[in-house]
Length: 192
Image 1 (cartoon, rainbow, N blue to C red):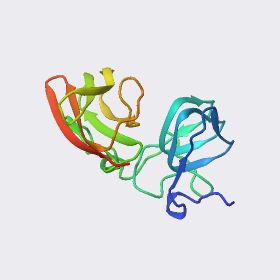
Image 2 (cartoon, rainbow, N blue to C red):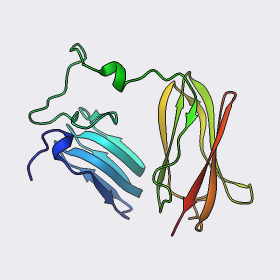
Image 3 (tube, one colour):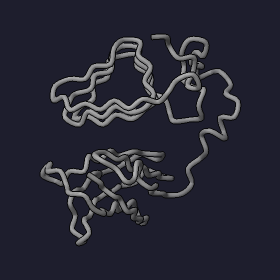
Image 4 (tube, rainbow, N blue to C red):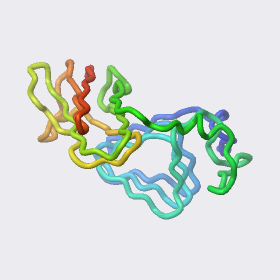
């Protein structure tokens, strides 16, 4: 298998596993896409470069792993496209890393989903955040985040389970966020 020459030459791949022990990414791996291993410990070994999402029971990261923001394609370091040091000029960086000035709760992705979805939100300042999932009867089925979050963009992965770990039935759910004085809601559709 040849290594990618930046993202533009590489397909996005989703890895799904029902393993309950370990899922290991080997040395010098370039990960584009998503890794869903909700019952396993995912280990990223030395020099792994990641531009994807991971849903796992636990994630262990060894030294020298590179996590990349989801910026426009073609920016993944690799042969022919090495990472820039922090001292180098980055053209267009102000467009790519826009200043966050508002609170926001994005629509979950994917939606509809089965069995995992990602909820994204942004904070213009560090804030206490409560992110809860409600059923159609207005009952809280799970609080997926509760605590202090730094300024910036955040992602929370939900695997369609309630507070006891039981998998929920198909239907419409509501994701509600409270961050300081900000509140917002999004409908989530779980299909089995």
